[in-house]
Structures are given as structure tokens and as C-alpha cells.
Amino acid sequence: MKKLLLSGAVFLLTGCPGPMDPVRLELPAQATLVNNKLCILVPAEAGERIFSVQIGSEAGQEMLRTFGDPASQPRAVKGECLPTYGFEFKPGNSYAAYYGLEKSATEKGRLFAVRFILFQDADGKLKILQQNQR
Image (cartoon, rainbow, N blue to C red; front, side, top):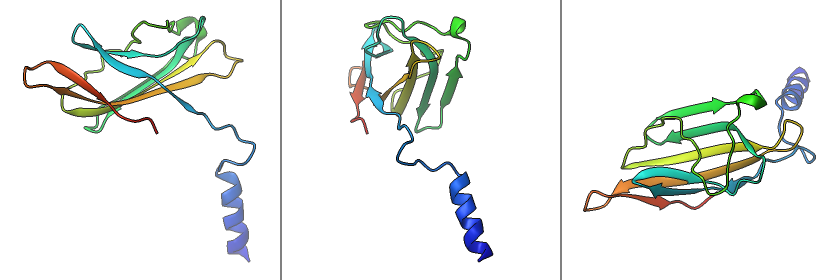
């Protein structure tokens, strides 16, 4: 009986999603090359700011930046490349990038994601193979 009560308490305290818990949907971002440099684009709305950036590769590179203070949040502008904060993208690797955008701390934010492989063609030019969003 104690084991049953203990396992029930653990289940309730773990924060498993329930029917009324919000599920954050990933919206598609786009990876492209501009002047042979990686550019990540999102359909930002007027007034949206970046509150989090997470970039990682299957090679183990990772970068996470958050901007808790609204005054320090960079603006996201539709049609302009989002900042990658010095993350080094190397050909031959698979990457995932996530950008959290919000208009204000009281409004629900949006999460944009892009997954892609960066490679060089036979001429040495960088190319991107965008992967399907999950």
C-alpha cells in the first residue's frame, strides 16, 4: 500500500502534462545563406522581441541565451536575419535552432524552430539542406 501511495504522489508531483496544460507549438523558421553566412528568418510580428535562443548540433555544440529583462531583448524584424551570437556553424553538421519571441511579458510568446544540415558542394560553396519540422 505504501508503494502505491508513493508512486501516486511521485506521479502527481512530476508535473506531467494534463488536459488543461498548455502545449507550446513549434512554428517553422527558415535557414538560408546570405553572403555565404547562415541566416535564420522568422515571420516576426511588429513589436516582437527575442527572449530566448538555443542552438545545438549533433556534434555536441550548444549555445543558450535568455533575455529576462525586456529592455535587453533584441528586436526580431520580419525579413532580417536573427542573431546567432557567435555560434560557429561548421559544414558537415546537423543543427537545430530555437528562437522564443514575445511582445510583452504578459502575452503568450511564440517558439520558432529550424533543423538543417550545413554542407559544402563540390565547388566549396556552402549549402543548406533544411529538414522537415517535427
